[in-house]
Amino acid sequence: MVTATGSHAGDLLIGFQLKFGRPLLKMAMAGDPYVELLLGTDDPRPLYDKMRAGQPLFRSKANALVITQHTLGAQVLRDRRLKICHTNGKPPGRELMDKIGWDGSILGLDPPDHTRLRRLAQPAFTPRKIAAYRVGVERVCHELLDAAQRRGEFDLIRDYAGPLPIAVIGDLLGIRESDHEMFYRHGRVIGSIIDGVKSLAMARDFRVAHGAYLDLFRELIQVRRAAPEDDLISELTAARDEGAVTEKELLDLCAVLAVTGFETTTNLIGNGTLALLSNPEQWEMFKKDPELGPKVVEETLRYDSPALQGTRIPHEEIEVAGETVGVDRALVVLLGAANHDPEVYRDPDTFDLTREGEPDHLSFSGGIHFCIGAPLARMEGDVALRVLAERMPGLRVAGPLKRRSSPVISGVSSFPVTSI
Ligand code: HEM
Image (cartoon, rainbow, N blue to C red; front, side):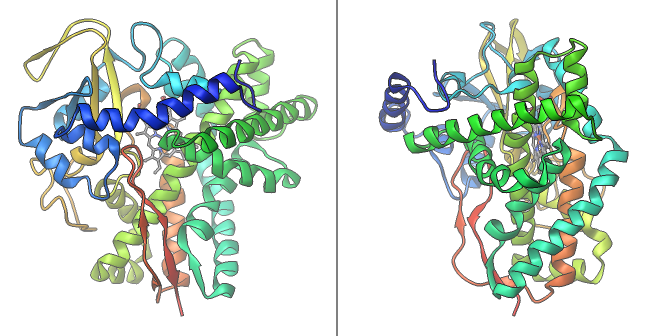
C-alpha cells in the first residue's frame, strides 16, 4: 500500500514511468501534434492549428480522438452517453495517481456517486456564499499587496495569485487560523499535482502534503462535530453522520477542492494580468472602468484558459461528427483550442474586452462536470484583478517570465513585476 511516507516498490514504478515514458512516447509518435502537446510546448497554438486543419476528429497515435472545434467540443462535453471513467471503472491516467495515493473524488467519478458527492459540495458555492466570501477575498488581496508594495519588486504568482486561492479555500472549508501556515505550505504541493507527476521528488512531496491535509481534515471533522460552524467541513460532517457519505469520500472531497481550486485560479489571475499588461489599450480601458472586471475574467478565460483539456469516454459505440467511435476510446476536448476556434470567435487570437454576441468559452468544461467552483473563481478573478488595477496602475513586467509548458494547465510560473 502507498502511504504518506511512500512505498519503495511504488517509487520504483513511478521512477521507471517518468524516466522512460516520455522518451518512448517521443520516439514512437513523432510528428503527431497531440503527442507534441502532451510532451510540453510554450505555445500550443500552431499545434492546435495543425489538428484543426484536418477532420473534426483528429486521430492521435496516443490512442485519443482529439477535438479542437468549439461547437463539437461543447456537444461532446455535454453528451450524457459519455463518461469520465473507462468501462473498467477507472478514469484515464489513474495508475500513476493511484501510486501516489491520490483519489480524484468527483473529478474521477460518474453518476450515481458523482451526483451524490457533487450535491454535498454544492452548498459551498451558492450565490449567497459567494457574496459572503467576497469581503474576505478583498481583505486578503489588500494584505498581499501591502506586503508586495513594501518589497517594491515582487512575483505576481508567488506573492499574489498563488496565496490568494489557498487562503480562500481555507476559509471555505473552515481551516483554523492556527493551521493557516501549514495549509498554505502543503497546499502549494497539493495544487501542483493537477499538472501531473513530474518527478519522483514531486510524488514523495505530494504524499507527505496529502497525508498532512488528510490528518488536518480528520481533526477538524472531530472539532466541527462537537461545535458546527458555517463552513463546508461542518456541512459534510453532518452528511457523514447521516450516512450520506463515507469518511474516505468526505476527506477526498475536501482534498479535491484544493487540487482543482488552487492552480486554476492562480493562473486565471496570472494569465489575466499578463494579457492586460501585454495589451496596454485594454489595460487602460480596465483601469478607467473597474466595473469591466467580470469582462476581463471572461475574456482571460477564453483567450488563455488555465484548464486545457476535458476527456470523455463512450461506454457504447457512438457517432461523433459522422465517425464511429468505439467503446473506451478517449475523446479529448482541447478547451484552449475550442476557445480560439475562428468559426465562432472573431479574431480569436486578439484579447478584446469589448467582445459581444459570441458563445461562452469552454474553460469551465460543460455538462454534469461543469466546474463547480466557477462562481468562486469568477469572483476571485474579478476582485484580484480589480484590486491590482486600482492599487498598482503603474504595474509593469520587471524581468523574464517563465511559462509552464504543460498540456493540462496554462500559466506562468515566474512573473516578476514592479509598480514603482
Ligand atoms: C479559473 C479557475 C478554474 C478553472 C479554469 C476550472 C476548470 C475546471 C474544468 C475544466 C473542470 C471540468 C473537468 C471535466 O470536464 O472533466 C472543472 C471541474 C471542477 N472544478 Fe474547476 N476550475 C476552476 C476553479 C475551480 C475552483 C475555485 C474550484 C473549487 C474551489 C473548482 C472545483 C472543481 C471541481 C470540484 C470540479 C469537478 C466537478 C465535477 O466533476 O462535477 N474549480 N474545473
